[in-house]
Image (cartoon, rainbow, N blue to C red; front, side, top):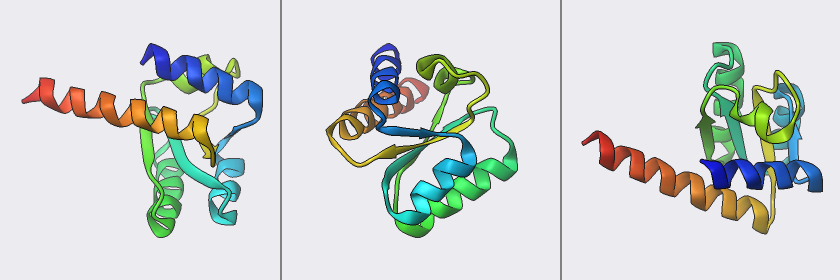
Length: 108
């Protein structure tokens, strides 16, 4: 998760991520997002809005550990984000998918 966190910080500094549930939802609906990220402590309403929008558009959505999104981007209280299309996003998604696969293997 450390590498993901570093790449998220880079994405924030380079403008490749939109932070905040409402702004992320706008990016998803406008077709400018490639994926969504949610803090595991986000409200059920926020999770539902983001996950429904992603499901409708066929976009991946990933849950991050509590506070990880805020820490990585240096902005407190951020519970959702949209990753814009590009190489940095693809690398973040690769790492998240690999980390989830590793977690499933450990839980077996």
